[in-house]
Image 1 (tube, chains in turn yellow, purple):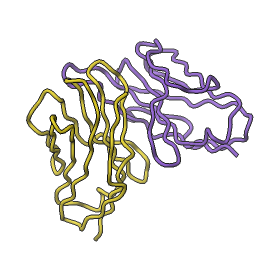
Image 2 (cartoon, rainbow over the protein chains, first blue to last red; image 1 turned 60 degrees about the vertical axis):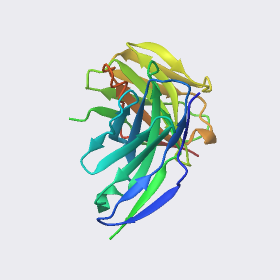
Image 3 (cartoon, chains in turn green, cyan; image 1 turned 180 degrees about the vertical axis):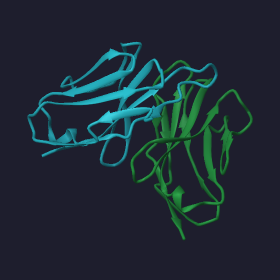
Image 4 (cartoon, chains in turn purple, orange; image 1 turned 30 degrees about the vertical axis):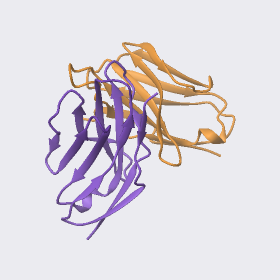
Amino acid sequence: AQTVTQSQPEMSVQEAETVTLSCTYDTSESDYYLFWYKQPPSRQMILVIRQEAYKQQNATENRFSVNFQKAAKSFSLKISDSQLGDAAMYFCAYSSFNDYKLSFGAGTTVTVRA
Amino acid sequence: DTAVSQTPKYLVTQMGNDKSIKCEQNLGHDTMYWYKQDSKKFLKIMFSYNNKELIINETVPNRFSPKSPDKAHLNLHINSLELGDSAVYFCASSQEVVRRGYEQYFGPGTRLTVT
């Protein structure tokens, strides 16, 4: 089974600043997918960004970008120009190429200071 | 329009009772899932159905029984509820997109409290 590790239980960032969340994973597969999900206090799970392992280019969605290091099995999320609405728990997730299920990390709680 | 909906959003019940949670998706997806989020916020897959066929059944007590009457619905029935079943249960759906994987869309969750 794949293991996804988020080593930062909590992160705090000043509004308008940048914060980076770390995620590492363990897999023997060469083709897979990685995701970051956001869970605000409303508890709704929202897909933030997706990365296909075969792509070397890092994914970007507006203020959210990832640093995907395949050899290091690392998949960090950068939130730029942080906004109060970014305050949430962020989950890193892994899905293998032929597998339906998502394996989640333990999550990182992001607090945004005004 | 809500893409993935769950009812109810909150469920408080006593130990030993039987309860059901319903899930519906209007995205036209062919795969649906149930996840459990425990008190520490850890998310774990429970079941998955693809075209009404059970394809994932993780180590879940057999008191939990999913049922998929059609591709748009996946219900979760829980018998003889126990205190440890208290959690948030999420329904999700996906459709395989070539080279994009099974991007999953989640419902709002059902907070189950067993007293």
